[in-house]
Length: 73
Image (cartoon, rainbow, N blue to C red; front, top):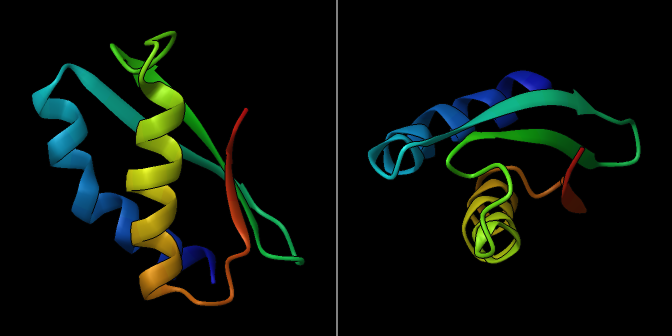
């Protein structure tokens, strides 16, 4: 599952990088929780939670249905 999640993150990474940010996969737990670290301009951005939930989480869940949640650590 971790490889599938990484593949999705690699697809959306250019959009984050276009705004000066980036995302790093930290862990995928057995119960379907994906832990990521937002970097660059995304770290501390007031819109980062919306980006995480409406962008990253939606894309990951669409392609990897086993994922229950995406959280920033």
